[in-house]
Amino acid sequence: MENENIIRLSVFLGLLCLFSLLEYLIPRRVMPGSKPKRMAANLSLVVIDSIAVKIILPMTAGLFAVWVAEQDRALLGFHTPVILAIILLDVIIYWQHRIFHVVPMLWRLHQVHHSDNAIDTSTALRFHPIEIVLSMLVKFAAILLFGIPVMAVVIFEIILNGAALFNHSNIRLPFDHILRLFIVTPDMHRVHHSVIKGETNSNYGFNVPWWDRIFGSYVAQPEQGHENMKIGLNQYEGGETSLLKLLLMPLKLK
Ligand SMILES: [Zn+2]
Image 1 (cartoon, rainbow, N blue to C red):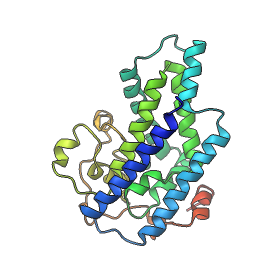
Image 2: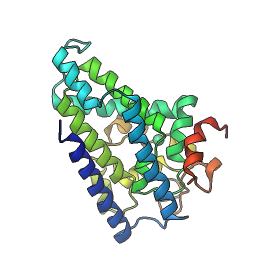
Image 3: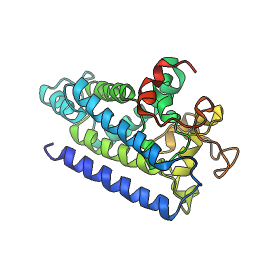
């Protein structure tokens, strides 16, 4: 547990650099607008998110899992094995994501993520701090209910961060049709960032692609093709790169 933060930060920075380099070497799409401005906004948000989580929540999800295990507080009275717990957390995050698209109050928060008018690895960091705190609380609830072990929490958070950086990246991959049978690929997740409503409300998965196929939200390719599709939200056509405006976005009716 002492090394958890160092391991997570190292994996995060390593993958951010790797995918940024691959975006430069094998880009999938031409990026519109100013990349430095978007990067600055998205990176600033992730810093604010980490501070908000530290201030608002009394402990990390990992430490909460340790407490639940030590005090034997799992509400259903059992502790879920690690592999099963990771799969369970993934399906919970899938449904959480779907709910954020349906409930208007939650969509106001989540539209910060979708208001990026391009999609690259930095988009994976673009979330409103309240959305991040709420999703941590969902994890806390899952840990308490199903007795999720600390190992599963730590592994899941590392996988989730890494997978998000990967599936938002603007990289061209060979054998996408095979890869997407096992993992959410950038081409699969890009459909979710389309301005077309039916496409925005599809491909909610972050790690494994199965939930979208099982629960009927899978869309294979964007209608306009990957090169021509429009990314973002029509009401934020030019993208939004002002940090203050991003933080206040949920208060605005658009
Ligand atoms: Zn979304």
